[in-house]
Image (tube, rainbow, N blue to C red; front, side, top):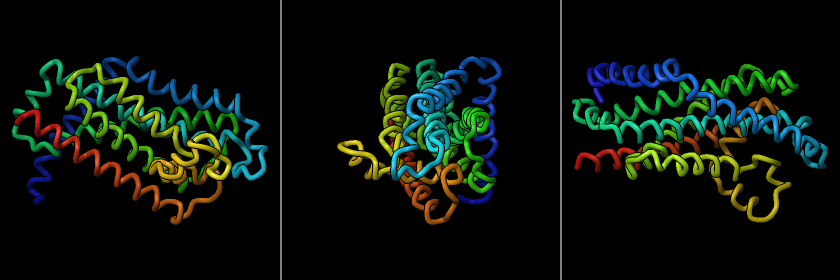
Length: 259
């Protein structure tokens, strides 16, 4: 893509991101579920399973510090899925057809949707971190916070491409439960509740091969242990791989709408 093409695409991306952000001001209540769900999840699991940190071999002194990355990822996943739901609404109402009729390239349109999800994921992430720090979560340091932020924004973008893929396929908001359940299932079948050596049965098998396990371990740095490149790059590679896969599916689905 040439420099002129990039500069011509930026206004389109900014407009789509601005439209998404304006929804927060017009309907602020729409953001509440995405903030409350991961926060309640974090507080609930901390209260119920907090003593798991006493098990031999558990890698964290406080269960709060161990579980908060899961809630951060949950908030990002829900935000990305919500982007898919909003896209399905726009398809139902005919607004997206007008967007497809514009001269904007298909990848640019998808980029606007994905980038807006990445930015909106910072809202539940910020709330969860503030609540966590208030009840004793270990401060991850600025480097740990930076890594977590990059991973959260990347996961929201990936979840948005997953939601977009389903929106283009079903073209209805009725697919919303599938968008949300898919992202939640992917996050929770990792080392969400306990370190991998302490898991047993089918959950251990699934967590071993689930690529989001690597993403979770990258987010968990700083909150549990130190930040290192050795624990960061596997998460980045896994996240980029999943994002590329669903981006391909989303673009293919978008092209089929105009075929």
